[in-house]
Length: 134
Image (cartoon, rainbow, N blue to C red; front, side, top):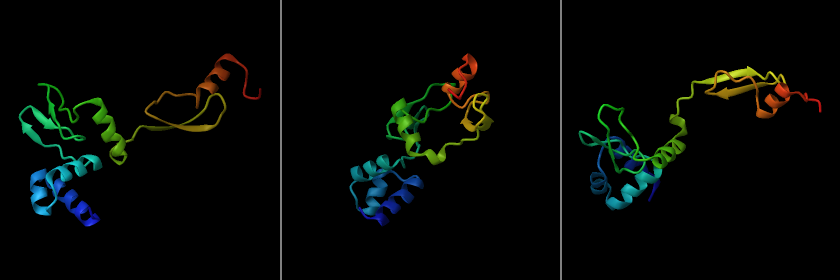
């Protein structure tokens, strides 16, 4: 499959076309289009029924629970796979900069606003003695 065909499939899929419609317009087998989309993570979240969506990773239907936030993935494996493939879409605003209470070196941490030490080793040495010069 050439890069131009891959680009064309991405554009058509992002417009919301089905695998069959993409297959008809590009001349590539439907199963090949589906496999390419799943492997590259460009599966579009589409509604099947009122209570079902398609998994963003594998394209399988995801049963929704009433009165709950809509699920985007069919299981944890698909969720982790999709997020690991799409790290650029992770919204990381909870970065904190601190100075270690044990060794005095600056360190940054994600998601924990109450850290005092850069490592477990620094915590043990500062809390239970031993110092850093041993």
